[in-house]
Length: 511
Image 1 (cartoon, rainbow, N blue to C red):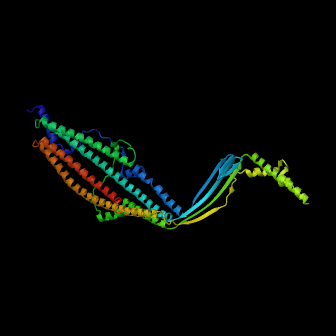
Image 2: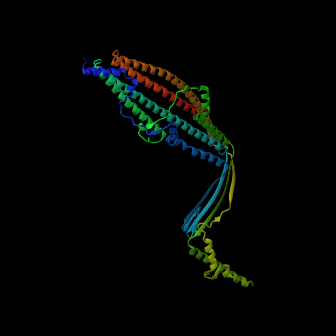
Image 3: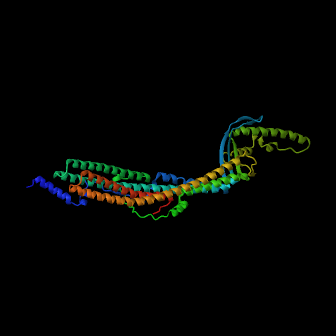
């Protein structure tokens, strides 16, 4: 009669032997996984990144100055420049010497002035400026498009990396589950005397190793999501484990033609288009440099006014009274002569603005005060002035030749830079097209390797259950299947990342 402990162990062994493997695998002994509460699709990630990415927003900031550069160039070519100025001043009483002549000012004065000026210049520089500005604006626009293409590629690549790391977490969790079953099976066989304690310890060590690998995979998945939100330009809204990435990327045969992709890249890659725009700007600069041999036409016109008010009116009225008294005395002397000649006399008081020899006529005083009350805006206008100038430099110390040579060299540099950029892009398209095909072929190879590893594991499990296999053999088979499954996940997402890189090189989405 069998002992009760042996009978119980035998029942456990038979249960393990005939229990279906999927049921065992479903018994996950790891910590409870939190349920995701935030969902983020790739389209939402791209939209958020476009609105918040610091690098992309910095590129957008260049659009405003570029547009104003075009407007400024056209305004300089067809519209005159206008300026308005005004000012006020104070001059104290005293004397000053200029050119050997002494100038005295008996009363302090308040002064004010204004001027309005218009000027317009026609030259090769102004005529070619709009073309240069438009080429620069196109370059800035293509740089912005390029920043958008790069942002899309970076976010898509990081989204795929995050999905890849989540898939690796699933692989690691399945490995933990398999190793947990391994521990149970080894313990059950040890309980009935079909295995040694070494088998149990081997299973436990393997289980511990897989636990650590799971933790590392979870950390890598969290880091990938943190990097994704950094590229999007926002703070992550929740714990990384609570963020779900629901998008799936099916594997399909690559159906693109290399020559079509190269032609598309030549036409649509923003880096190539920006280099072409810079080449056009350099050509305009060379034309502007050559235009310095042509005449320059300048037109200017202006209006101005001035006001001066004396602050010590009584002092000036005293001086005017003294002058009037001098005129009055001269008039009296002249009247004596006129009387001797039998002529009529003049009214010396009225002719000199006096009502008596010591008093100015109130009307004269009132007129003086009214004429002096001009500060600050009762201007005396100066005559309108205008000028037309045509100039043609004859010799400028070879500065024009130097500028033409420098502009020509810059034009050649821009042409070579354009050609180099085109070669770089075409090389990148060829390389990434090959990478897509290689990654696609690798998927089939890794799929076959994964299936073989799973079959190897099944055979090792069956051999160990019936006692013909060893724990080390089973541990090796489990490690092999984990590597194969991980390599398959890497192959699948390497294919999708290669497509994202190819899209960045071409300059537009391909799917």
